[in-house]
Image 1 (tube, rainbow, N blue to C red):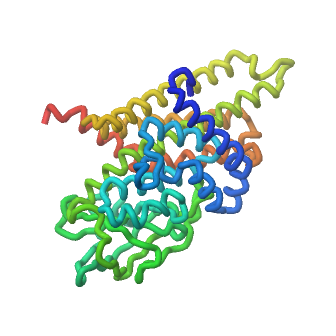
Image 2: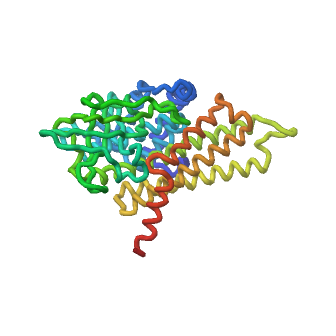
Image 3: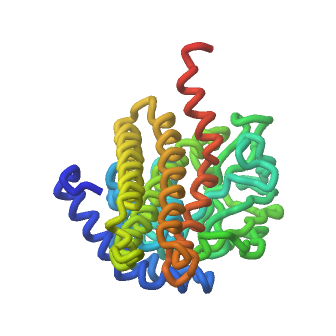
Length: 382
């Protein structure tokens, strides 16, 4: 991250966030991964810095930051632990959705506790049979008196079980995107249960579980936005969520690159430092260049989203695809540069590789990002 390109306020934001990542995330990341521990207390410390409501308006208890500010925050947090930074990105996506689409009562009731991370939030769109084809979801919401009853299963939900608040997409009308509405579900609502914590390749420091809605009964006031508006709300939330995950990939990969530099400077082979070998220096140069290019694209997409540019969804998809592919590739090459040490857990590189791999899948797989980009490119030829 080039400090000269940042405003004074942004530089201060990065420095504060970096201090937090180095003090509270990095020293514990390997233990959390090994023990599958979700550090809720540390998340609440992050909220004390305003990181529980990054995009939420100040009058609702948030920090009121821009998307351009947010990608700096999440890149910096991920340098300490991509798994925790990834969950914070999701929590903030949900908080923004409530702030943007919630009515005054919903904002007043939910946002202060979410911004303080006294309550955690999760996003529940994906189902066992509806991932990339999100508009095919089958969870059903039926009016019952002045409330709703929800029935269905949500799959791969980050933070599930620990989170109190869930934005759940359910079908209230016919087939397709137009029949979907968004609901605010509470962990303690009757009929809400959770599957076991999934055993995963990475992101072990946060739980991933099914959210099971077995005739879950929601009282009045739980519809987020208008009936039939849920798919649009979901996609608008994902535009920002994709930038957050893209930034987390940059942060994790940057940490892997920094570790590689230190490792090559310390190691010798054939009578010279590995860092002085031209072939390895060229690899490092390529890794740094690719990260800089990905960062520029993420920042361009964030600025477009801040400005309400009609091309923002297209740019967010492009940035998410490029940054997550690049981040994983850089981390994988960093592991190779460490040789056998990169394969050992204690060096932390293999954890970064495992954590960043899922970024190419979540918030819309990178194949779907290509669909969105291609659609934007070919729109004029329809």
